[in-house]
Length: 322
Ligand SMILES: [Zn+2]
Image (cartoon, rainbow, N blue to C red; front, side):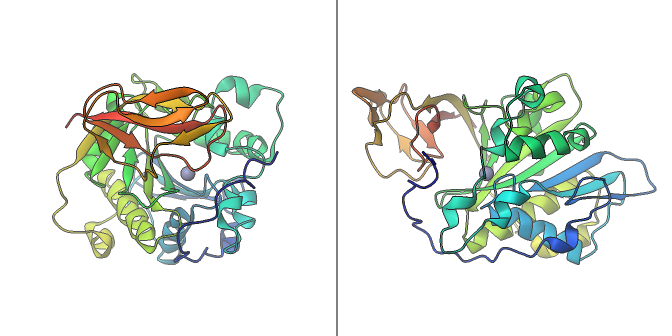
């Protein structure tokens, strides 16, 4: 079964246009659609990565903007990359949920066993291709968007260093500290990014609903703030994209992921994400005959999925800690 064809129809209008990324195909890194700009001044290697999922347009729009405006690093190396080209090319505004990936999720393959294993897919071929470049990256910013129209989320991963970087960037308001998915490791948790002792670091941002106009603004602002943090651009370059008076951040620690165990999983309500369930024991879903209940008071629902397939994450549960 093609698990993408049975998705519910899109519930949101398409307000964004997928930019033409053909001008960025040849790049200069030996990997198509990856371009590096080097400064004469020492500094880190920063990668801004877009379209890890082919139907998530905001990252491509942000990178297109950086290219068109000749944004260059004041120090170190800035790489701009488009990851899942095959899926992005398949994007069809008439059927926009179809192009998340071609064969498998590119953001679930980033462990040694899978990368070095025998499994073949369009996405694994691409991951194996871009891996050598990823290995040279000090700081990764991976730009995504979500199925539901929810406040933007910075996914800081399970480590303190990720949380500290998300706080230092200061935007968006919600920081989610999470360990990822049972279905496979994310790029943001790959290699040194997933090791507290390693100086490299990574953030994944969910900029809002896949096709809402605001997601492109969030992608732009967060990218500018990421580059500012590492001293790679002047404030004047970033300024037009920055909102004033950022609200204090809220940190949610994900305590568990609800992984779907049967082919009959249903949510109790039409959750969109960031709902807070005041009482422990509140039923939020049924998986086969098993009720899924909240494990503690004031439980926050993070990114409920519309793709309710066995083995996949249905929703993550977290506590507001800050
Ligand atoms: Zn994504």
